[in-house]
Image (cartoon, rainbow over all chains, first blue to last red; front, side, top):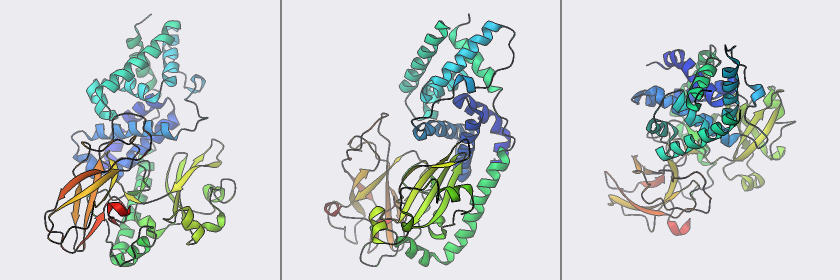
Amino acid sequence: MDFYEYVVNHRRPLLRFAYLLTGDAHHAEDIVQTALLRAFRHWRQVTREDHPDAYVRRMVVNAFLDARRRRSASEKPTATGNMPVGAERDHADTHAERAAMWAKLAELPRAQRAVLVLRYYEDLDDSNIAELMGCGSSTVRSNAARGLASLRKEWTRA
Amino acid sequence: MHDLESTLRATLADRAAEAPTGDDLVDVVRRRGGVQRTRRRIAGTAIALGIGVAVVAISDLNPFRPDHDIVITAPGRVAADQITCGSDQLSFDPDILVERPPLDPDSELGTAVRTTARPPVAARLIDGWTLLDQVGPTAHLMIWLKSTAESTNMAGSGMIVATYRQANDGTWDHESSGECQPQRAFDDGLNPATWALPGARPGPEATSITILVTERACASGQSSEGRLADPIVEYRDDAVLITTRVEPPVGDVFNCLGNPATEVTVELDEPLGDRQLLDGMWFPARPVQEAERR
């Protein structure tokens, strides 16, 4: 598959995925761009993979997790108030529930957030998540459990 | 109230619809990737013609350059055609070490590095700047040092890699910097490792070599026993390159106390002969040292 053909066809799913990881449109574009440039440099190797898209998604996750190490001490995760407001909901309670959930997601450590996005948006099982994140399944389970526990605590309170 | 996991799933699906469309992403990647590829192709031709000169230029920067004459050829093709300064975060064309394309002095960043965002390097020691990579608000620059005793003391390689970050108001700030010791970039997820000979150099008839491998990354002093990948061996007319790689240790946080060496025997496809033994982790590859002299 030609690289540019890949970008044209896959950029939107990649950006949706990155946006859910970061909660920020500009940051999502940055990490997808970083991942695609890395993929471009090694495109022949990428296309030798059984699932090139999984390979690029791994690069997106790595770029997202790498950004954690570059983040300055004073920089904070995207605050609730900076997040885009969702479309109108029919039901005010549903809207409040999801807004609270989205806000709490932004506060989770990146590895926990990545696991939850991969599990509940990408519908990947733990072994696939482990492979994509370069860690063990037990780490995935533990990050998922901790992330869900944090969400549950806030969600119940809300 | 809905259950937590259903709400999480619905929240993510809702929010995904708000993601940017990336309509200009193709153009951005094409432009940035295309520029790099074009430069690599042009420079590659020049390098092929003048490799001898180029190699001398690079090896002059090498603080571990031996006293005797050594011909260091271009790196092998086993690794990616990129190099790093020792971090996975940034890789770039090795041709940059020779070409040293200057940072546009009139650009915002070019102005900032000389005025409001100077690095912790005295201006009198700086010979030039090159923009290695820029993604979003983060830029990586190479600072080329003049050849003086003071700059050699600061960075034996003569190169410092600096990271700059652009704030929302457009101003640039120096974030971090450190010496760049060029290494070949690999995309295998493994940690780099150096190696040394445990004793004297093997004889010309040797078809196996015992080496001592030391992981470079912080690993809390763990042995790399059981984590060593098969060494990469490259054969050249005048040298045999051995490159060692190590599976990262399990865990998230490590201290950097220094790691013990692990003994490995490398089988060669052909006798060593009178060829040099080079450590292929570095760019350019460095002559191997005997353990007691490290």
